[in-house]
Image 1 (cartoon, helix red, strand yellow):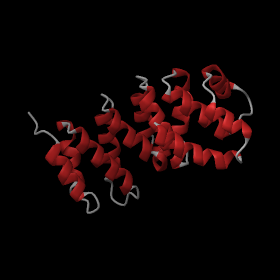
Image 2 (cartoon, rainbow, N blue to C red):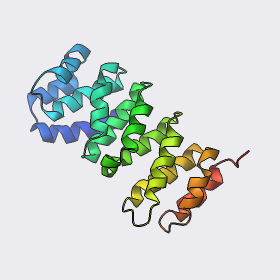
Image 3 (spheres, helix red, strand yellow):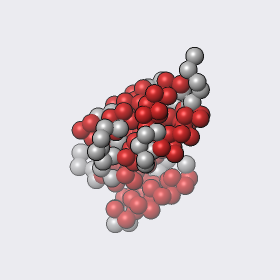
Length: 191
């Protein structure tokens, strides 16, 4: 958590202009003060992200909704920080939220971090969501091959036999073939 907090701190320090308010949010141990930043009007994004990250890593469930919003942000760094805090938070709603974000075709451009989070969570929602996203990405001409690759790698890490058909289909795509072959080797045979 210290490495994640350090990387987040460096990025958000730049966004805040190195303000005293930022330094205070980074140092405070007062969870009520951090939680108030999440609900107070006109708070800058860097302040909300700092508070949500710190609360999530501390296991405070008040951070769940702000972290899910950050997981769906267009800035990949915000998504990665939110995913880390969501893992630390260990809220049972996280997998369902990540699956909803990953499978939302309107937000496919921002689905990479939710897909990776699903693989990391190893939740019941993970395999079905990854299969759904992968099958969509296998359509001819689909430009989101990196997302497809993340699905293949995630399914390989999960090793669930339900993924075999989708991985067999992925094996025919040049950019996915090697990863799909490796994932198939880890997926238990059906039956």
